[in-house]
Length: 184
Image (cartoon, rainbow, N blue to C red; front, side, top):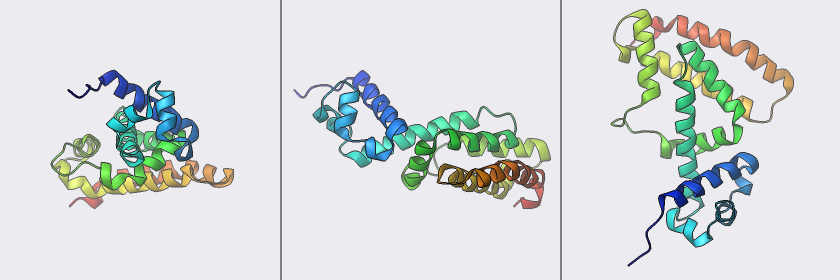
């Protein structure tokens, strides 16, 4: 009879991987280092994550959930955009991993997408009409937030960092004020 995998061990492994990723980034994340940090063995880690890529995907999914939780704490679409940017800057390693694995972690059309649903509902409540008619404005806000986030999580001078922080709120707010123009 094969040994059962203890769910607490799996949680320790993922927590160890998160800790290593946050402190050292990609270079510090090896399955051996994760095993050591999780107080388990490398073969135990391999039983749960067949390779480093599988571990990366699990981390990206966790970081996507963290970003979702942070953004859904907003009360307005404008605050959502600011929270998105703040999350990315506060967690640059996590944000870069999340988007490098985007194609493999993004929910499919048949899976609930809480961020999209939240955002579209807020726009429809504010301006009227059906939530789905605001898809273009939603994607505009996400693309703007992602672009600014990618700039902030990369090597950037203090001057340009300040320029982004000065410009981003007024640009994202203008986009959202004019969301009805983008209705489909």
